[in-house]
Image (cartoon, rainbow, N blue to C red):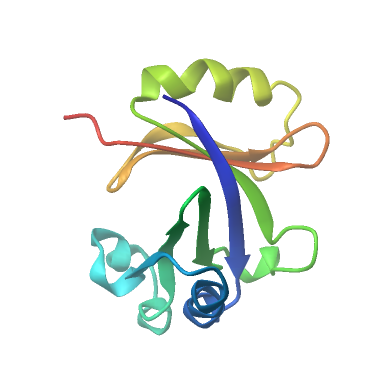
Length: 140
């Protein structure tokens, strides 16, 4: 089943921000540092303490977040620090929606839906400038 939630991007203060939201909203918070994942080898050691995935769930509230990992050429700034996060069970479930929303998407930051160490992943800015991030379970 497809789900869509807000996705927030921070610049090194993701854990602090998400703990604040947890204090305000309650619920369960899960934080995963980049250095605790198989992806750590793809990034310099100074990024290993950054949060690669945070998720706060409180009743019907579900917020996902991460610390900025992109190159300095893509510095975070107001307007590119939030996205719509679409999750699903399989790549086959995600692919049709991904392809339709990606029609006319900006190609300079387009990442096609593909297998990565933590599942299926892809992202882009659509023709209206909205950032979409897709994530699905790893093929098993």
